[in-house]
Image (cartoon, rainbow, N blue to C red; front, side, top):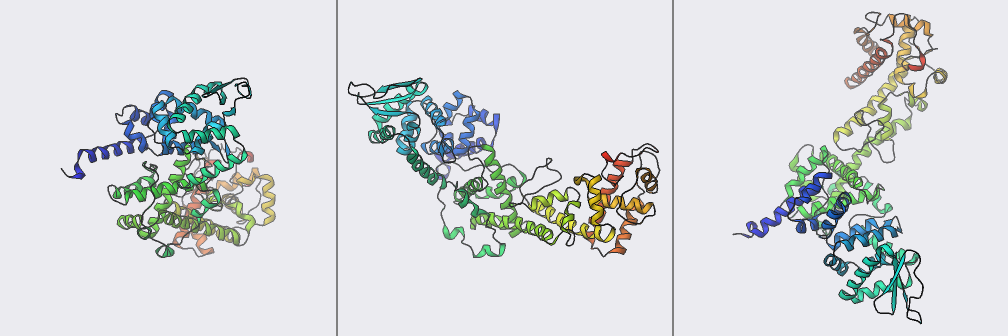
Length: 564
């Protein structure tokens, strides 16, 4: 039997596949897969440390202890780096919690971890809650234990004082450390004798920063480098991965799962091409490093599962945008780019594409909208104004009408880019159309603000108000209309003047022809105009189509026409 098909190799592949299923599952599904697995001792060491932490949080205490007892010291080290710190300050209460948690896992697991964990990390665990002192002249503790504390000694020379609820775990773990690695025990003892002061905290924090930096959790300022845009033309001049060759693996665990979003699923399909090849490890390690850098750069909480989902979703989206920018829809070329390029470079190409859309919006606003009249930006109808607001952010985001109300999303596809850029073009055209078609003054706008909520004074309001004024014989002019006269003006626009009223279907075509006489418009701009007219007609029918015959409209609840 060949090596590739040996029982040992086959079992290893089976274990990794089972682990992949577990880390891509969520919630109760993951719990059930773990509970029903006969391979926990082989699977747990392969779970990414962050995913292991989130799994432990979701499990009941008994199940969590069973799972943690199989973890490698590398995984525990990463978990402690995430759990024991709040920015640059140690969280003693979390150290206390993890001492208890580790002790519950049994002597075998504790010895395994303490043999591998650095003395500084063990000192951090113990010295933040436990103090040590030399015995006094009478052979007792130098200082009596305080309320809720217990003192104990191994040799009558050094006394340890710990909170009562962790005194037994501390005594047992220090005993094991003393027997298994006396040199490391002395290091921890020294830390407890001198106390965990601010200087030691700084030293511990520096060590923690170095460790997590290797996993991509860079300091905030350093992490911002991932948002330095790379134009597509520059990518060929940048170092290829095949030249830089190997990527340092992140421990021995599998890498973070790709979020199962549309962009994530498509990216995963491309990544699946590398399964079983020598490129699989380097590519997936890069993906995890990049996700961690986004967590750092976006100031996400590294101890929360949602942070990795959001960062992973952004990474998948921007990589896909970059691949489509560079290779169109050719998946062979996309896979070749994933293989030969550093993923961070591709991420930055994707960000360049997002920035390109943002620059178009910024250019329009810088010049003033519309046409040098910057104060009239508020005349944009939704969702155009929200899309532009998203593009104008320091770190551009997408607002899509189908998104939850008020939610700005990350750009995840070229469709998102196209939607945003089309919105900018549409806003620019409608600004020029409103200026050309409607007779209005800044003074009228200021007066309108007194009678209309600012949020409701949009281009549609200008157009419909002007349309009704024209119907009343006042010209296509934006000016206030008396409530008593608006119904007369509207009567000429309806198919039939009784509810439910509908606007005459030929009105839109008349408006299109009228606009064509006013200004030249491309085919795309004509579509923009038609969409705008569809929206204003729908607004008119919604607000006025249901009114009873001779019922006067109440301006407090209407936004389509300026009423007095």
